[in-house]
Amino acid sequence: MLVVVATAVVVVLVVASLPRWLPTAVIALRERIFASINGDEGIPVPGPLVDVSRFREVYAHPAANGRSRGAALSDLFWYWLAPGPHVHQEHLEPGPRYDEVARTTRQVLAVPKREAEDLARRCAARVLDELPTGRRVLVRLRDVMMPVWAEVYYELVFREPCPPRARDLIVANANDVVTALKCCGLRHMDRRARLTRYLVDRISAGEVPVRLPEWLSTEEKAYYLQGTFFNTAVVQMSEAMTHLLLAIAEHPEVQARLVEHPEDSAYLDHVLDEALRAYPLFGIAHRITSADIVVDEHTTVPSGSVLCFNYADYHNSGFPDPARFDPSRWEGLSAREATHIPFGVTQNRPCPAKGIAPLTMRAVTREVLRRFALASSVSHTRSVPNRGPCLLLPRAAGPAARPTALLALLRVRDRWEDVWRSLVQLVLGSYMVWDARRQRLCQRYFETHRPFGPAPSGPADGCPVRH
Image (cartoon, rainbow, N blue to C red; front, side):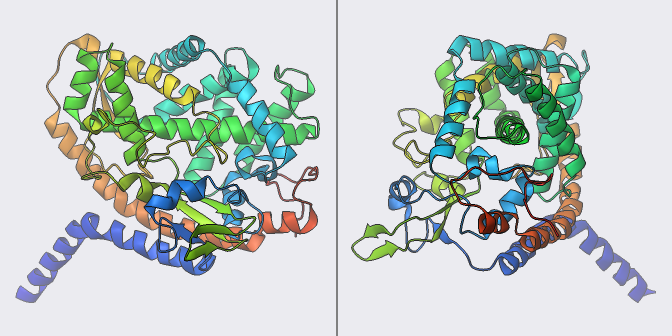
């Protein structure tokens, strides 16, 4: 009898401890599996060859300009970003094609400051109006933010309000991409193809106001719009707002100051800078060197090397207590002088939304805080696979005490979700990494196409060759 009781106690203790150790152990195992499948390709930056002091210099070097060709790692990104990764702005090789696509993107985003702010505010108000009123509601912040940015970028592209059908197609596409990227679900190419067909129809009907590059076929024009605006832009802005709002929800003193002094734009900028520092949108950005890069008299990075720039490591360096969320650290500190490049560097493929993103993020944040008090107690990591669970408490109902009991339950639920999610990520992530290496979408494309020549349309996943 004692043996049975002792065994039961041990089992209970082991099960109860799972949230504390299992997710971490599974993440470590997943990283080892990914490394085994992907091989040892890539030079980490910062790392033994290139330290923090040389990070920005090497990132900006003209020879650190290759994006896809020559890196096995690109197969994985092409797999996740399909369809049409061969015309995705972030993955085009340098040259006339990239220059024209980047110029087109800048034209779409060239909106006056007040117009951009008003657009973001209006879109946020429409989406927030759909939430229940008069009572607190538990949401996933990314799920709330994704339709906001679907509407924003639809209107930027088409210069008209976003209809419900288009919003649903954009959200389904973006959600499928980011869910696969985080290894929380497999790709569903049918969801992505529905948006492609919608865009093809709009382009064929001459309903896209912006002039798209003529060397792209109609299908590739749809891929460009889908990849740049309705995939990357919607996903990254939704993730950025999730991090920003979740940080505000988890730091009542920060939220109180924002609400009490809504006109204090400088403080909101500090909060935004700190969120982008602590939770950079990119984990690793890889570049392939087109020539030798002389780092110093003792170190040269050879041509053809794959440089893996680690944003999180760079953002954490040079700051005291980098794990602490502290907007006050930006008082008297210029983001340009800090180890802080949330939108990349100007000299090497900077984010085309680096101007409009902060403006629109501030507008959406103000609209959210005008309506709701935010509270959360969940795990907050850079990859935010939990999509940012958060309690929204209507401000119209008057001041309310922080719901301590609910937050305790939310924390417990989030920890147990981590257990199941980590196992799902292990299985699905391992499969997708293997499948991406098997399909070799990027490598096979460049085996049959010149890097700067016009690229013919491929099948649904963007690869011109299928077996």
